[in-house]
Amino acid sequence: MLSVVVIGKNEAENLPRLMSSIDALAGFCGFPVETVFVESTSTDSSLEIAKTRFDRVIALVQSDGLYASGGRYVGTMAARFPWVLYLDGDMEVCPQFFPIVANIPNVEDECVGYGGLYEDHFNSGSKAIHVFFGDVLKSQWATGFGGAVLLRRNEVLRLGNWDPSIYSKEEMELYARLSNGKRVVKYVGVQMVNHYSEYFTRFELLTRLLYPGAGQGKVFYGFGHSIRSFVIKGKLGALMQLDFEPYIFFGALMIALIGAVLLPIEWGLLWVASLVLCLSVLMRPGPFVRYLTLPIPLVLGLTKYIPYFRPEIKNWS
Image (cartoon, rainbow, N blue to C red; front, side, top):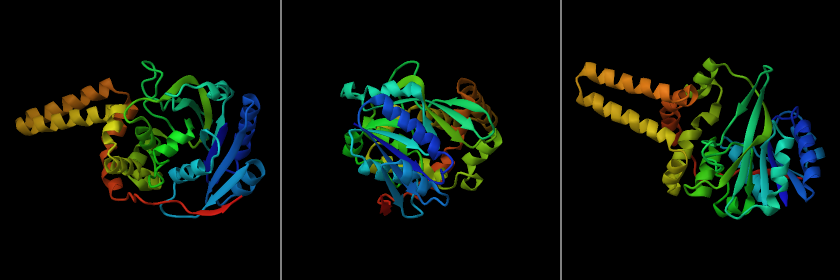
C-alpha cells in the first residue's frame, strides 16, 4: 500500500533516527509498507547503514547533473505500491502525521497527495516551523509542497515522473504538472516531519541568494532550471496559477520601471522607490528579498538546464 522513498547523501548520522520513525509509522498503519533508499555518492557509512535498515538500496553513479530530483526519479520507478511518501535522509516522520498516512486507502480520487508542517531543528539548537504549502488559511488545498510529501505514484508516473534534470525547485515543477494549475495536494495542519539541518544567519541566507559560491552550489540554478522546463513543457501558465505572488511582484516592478522611464528622472526614481517601499510593507521580509534576487538564478540557471539528463544506477540491493 505504501512505499517510503528516502534520498540521501552523507546521512549516516541521521538514518537510524529516520528509520526508527518509519518503523513506528509502519506499525501504526497496519498495511504493507516498503522502504527504498536512493544513495547519491556518499563518502560516509550511509550506504552500509541503509543496507541494514531498508528493504531496497539503490546507489547512483556520480554525475555533474545528479541532484535530489534524480534520486526521487529513481525511487519512484523502484517503488511498488500505489502511494509514495517522499523523505530526505535528514528528516524524521512525526507521529501526528501517522493517521493521515493510515487513511490513504479511503482517500477520494480528486486528492493526489498530502503535506503538513515541517519543524526545522538547526545545529545551533534552535527550532522553527516551516510551511511550504502556501495560503493554507483560505484553503485546505496547497499551492506547493517541499521535499517531504505523500503522493499517488501512478499520478507522478502518468505526468512523466520527477524531472531529474532540475537541480532544485523540482517540487514546484512536479506540482505544476500534477495539478495543471489546480490545487490537488491537501495541506493538513499537523506536523509532518522534523527536519535536522544547518543554521544560517540572515546575512548568510542573503549571500546564498546572490551567487552559487556562497554555499548553495548547483542548487542556486534551480529556479532558472524550473522556468526553462516549464516553457519547454508548456506548463508556465499552470505554475503561475498555482503560485502567482512572484509574478504579480515582478509585474508591479515592470510597471514601476516603465513609469520611471516616462517620467522626469527625479519623479521616476521617487515612483520606483515608493512602489518598492509599498511592496516591502505589504509582504513578509523573506519573500520580498527572495523575489528581488530571483532574476539572478533565473538568468544563470536557464543556460545550465540539460533536459534529457537521467541518473545512472551503480548498483541495486
